[in-house]
Length: 378
Image (cartoon, rainbow, N blue to C red; front, side):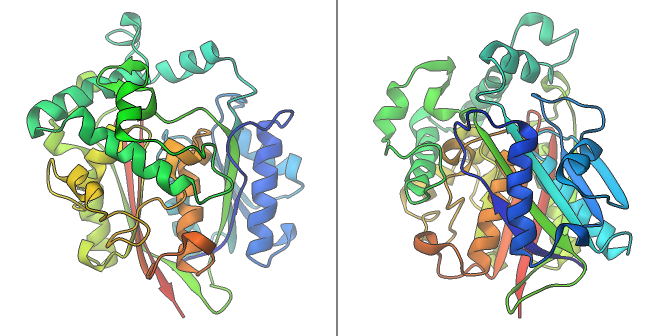
């Protein structure tokens, strides 16, 4: 058993003069205070990777910088799924009695601390060194290929994909920490600069500075506790050239295992936090997870199903597409927002009911998946 006892999040966007360690420290300090703990109470640390500071021992580098001496330290890297993978590992660590309070932290000054070319170069390395990287594709190009195939198989249009960008921007407008606060329309998305067709600029997440952290504890604190009910992973491939059919990707595997581990069904879920590096990512994952039928997620967006006041509120902070994406910390913001919603602290973004939440992270090009159910207990 484990509980998410505290969360911390910086604003995303530009943080001139702040290093990755600075941003991680700020988020960690907020999370520890939110849990009602002191730094000395933290006996485990899990740290996400950083492309700006690619140290081979980043977890202990951060522990030293932050002034803690944990009995357990581990660095994790499974792309965008890292935040939830670390949460799952922390859950198992405290459940096994290895640690009592595990600090999970990620953050980067990816926008101000790394050149555009260096960022593109680093991210392009997810491709196969012989069969893909040598041809020059970037992350958007890989997802563009996936999008083209998905659109062909399920009748999804570019306008359908644009709906997800519009929804995430609408949600970001209500969060002061979001990178973007200008409303957009489907027409704006369609008119934005082509990046890797069919994906255009507004179909893609931005590059951001930011940090996020949370504390996973063996025992809950406060009147409203958020418990990890069940979680699971799936890793079907690393490279697009080795990927299985679109109907056999890892999200379907991980959600099935997570439902079995938790004893919950999709019908039990009241709030969803789903990885959204690109509009196609969000569209596919919503359908893989069973939150919409194949090819029908966009119709649910249009109908208000995923709105703040809809039947299944989704990424109410604006997601990666509009709150921002600072590497590992990007998707960690999804869990921070989920915790705020579940504990009734989301302010003007508060949804009616967040008693059971489903979170899903995706790493690589739909390569690594983590599905997780959280429940509110009193």
